[in-house]
Amino acid sequence: MSLHSPMPATGAQQSFMGSYLDALSLVERLHRLLLDVIKDEFERLGVLEINAVQALLLFNIGDNEVTAGELKTRGYYQGSNVSYNLKKLVEMGYMHHQRCEVDRRSVRVRLTQKGREIRDIVAALFERHATGLQTRGVLSADGMDQITGALRRVERYWTDQIRYIY
Image 1 (cartoon, helix red, strand yellow):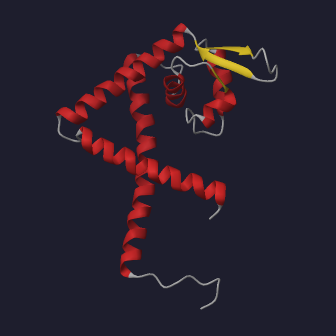
Image 2: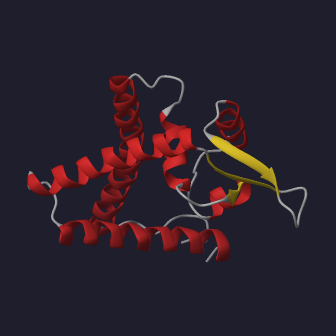
Image 3: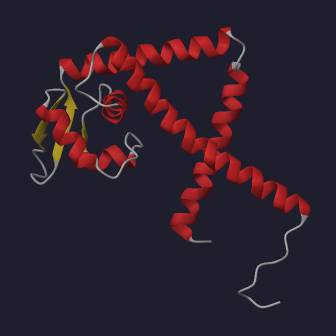
């Protein structure tokens, strides 16, 4: 067998691969669905000038003051257009921005009162979801811990793949 041809997969390997691909697809669909749920909540409340990605960004920033670079490194923002969304949020009055005193090239951002109101709407939505998941028997606290633990292990594995390229 050459170095460039893959090893023949066993039934168990093929089954795991199928489950892995299903999980990847599910994670992607869940993220899109989360954005749709947030969008629907804002439409129901008549909050139309902000989109779901921006609302989630405000929620994730919370009471912190961060730089644009920190948004990605801290996991607050996953998109590729962070500067666009920050600019729009500042223009719409949801965020303050200020040049960093130490590094004038860096800009620090934090929520305004208007931004905190959006953060609170998203927090209340998530609180309702968490309560509903438990009271309807969809997921227990232990089940949530298992899911979160598994996803963290995958995150660590992927991070290691980027850093160390096995």
